[in-house]
Image 1 (spheres, rainbow, N blue to C red):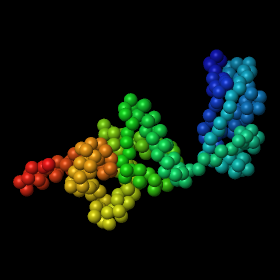
Image 2 (image 1 turned 180 degrees about the horizontal axis):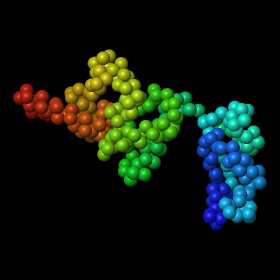
Image 3 (image 1 turned 135 degrees about the vertical axis):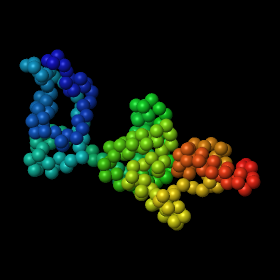
Image 4 (image 1 turned 30 degrees about the vertical axis):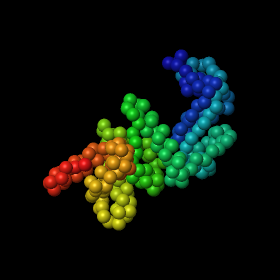
Length: 239
């Protein structure tokens, strides 16, 4: 145990990222302050001090200024860390461009972890994402995307049907408002005629047509099959 280097030693010459620094216990705050002031660490079970040279980046959702005034965060550590402060706005205050870039990066990360191609978000999902307030910020976005991927199983197109309950209900209300009541919350799918027209516009590319319609490929196939049954019943051969 005494020979095992800690994070500051391993990052020597680089960067240490301390996430949720506001949740650090008081005894750990004292140890961190000592390490930052002396620029040395002591391995567990060893009496020898080891110097290190790192850049420290700390992040938190807590109000550290308020926490140190209330005695929950050491004032000396607060000013030791506050060399340059960068305030990042919550996700609800960022533009759609930021949201798309963040979601795209998360989807690529999840795809690499699962050894699968990155999932694609249908336009209706983007609309819902842009209107949602994201109280859990980026962590909630990542959790939502991962849940949708699990719900989609082998389908790489993520639609409203794959969204968690609150988001899906909001998206369906939005669709109902756009349609002027033509589609209710329990029947948000486009008509078979609309599906076939959009498919033809996309040169029979089912993936692009499904994305424009805001549905999965499986839903598109079911819509097209439903159209063929209607045409056959009328004595016509589908085009």
